[in-house]
Image (cartoon, rainbow, N blue to C red; front, side, top):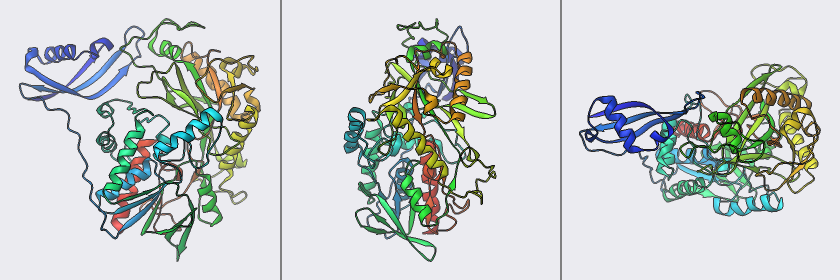
Length: 538
């Protein structure tokens, strides 16, 4: 017999299978020897009580029958070597890769063209950014095999359950080498150290089944005839034809937005968020979230139990009607340089699978509305004003802030920074705490880096967060500018029914770069959705 059981356990109890078995037996009213095995269906942590932290578990329990490990539904892919139907996919991020896998499943040949390098070669360019401050505009934390997600953490949590089958995406990650724990964790996470192997396995599968993956293949133009896309042209002069083109280039491919605009292909300005990365010693966040004795101003504070993961947080506050919120929180993580061009500073965060670094960092950002940049009130459907129709205005605003941060840092990707309390009080920090950001920090007053409406909203938001989390508001923490690539400042419109661009037949804008996803899983689901739609037309 099999039965679902829900248990509430302490961290130490949750770590012992023997103790879990005893609780299972007691809850059903049987002896422990009747329990032949179990696996987890769901697991979450509840740290709301100041007196006891709990783990909530939902288990599939086997009673008096042989235990069978949790089955992972394996997707079978067709070999498309001989098929004539093909689809060009521009970009090898999660949207592009999962679109390619879905096309294989449906018997259609995917041809991926990626401006950047494969995951192995890409590492050299990341090392040059961190150690020398050198940015390769085609190979960096945003561009290359796997996209921005490969080397920026691998968080798989999403609320976008209406966009597709989340379980299917997670199962595919496991099929290609991810740990099965992502199937039951409330906030699944793979880790930057493990993602490259998974991405490589996906690429190998695509090629083995007759698909194509081309690196160092930058899209530079489209060939459009009679309102329909016929082929794409790459920087090396190749012209590649296919029945359809999936545009999955990510939120940082500014040249693609400029190309579309130059060809009078409709794009729209879209709100996004911009701010800073804030980094604390991990023990401070542990103390805040796990109600430990407040961390000392210096030193290690109270050690977190070995049975507890490094604590995270999610914060949001309204400041004068404007949202201030945490973004991409990385416990036990590192701040990384994420610029895609020289002379700009962009920071992002990531964590290894064990989340065992001594710092916790998070984006802390403010919503940027269309009227903030245009100085006009826009309609709710984001159609540009006839007075100032430039759809690139928010993208240009984003880039200007990044370039200002670069100037203030002084070059070589050194980032402007300020201690948290100093930031909120408008004081230049006399010195800066140790930080995980390898290119280095320079003490600056952030009012000279950030637009005033962002700066003031962050000041008030961080003060409010400090009242909510005792110990959070401290000069042991540092703010680093700029966290600016939270989402695309451009939307590439598409028809709700066909998913094609309203002007260009067979052009399918997709995922984050088109404004239809936010994160690895939602981008993957959107890639699959577009692939399925294309299959109906071929």
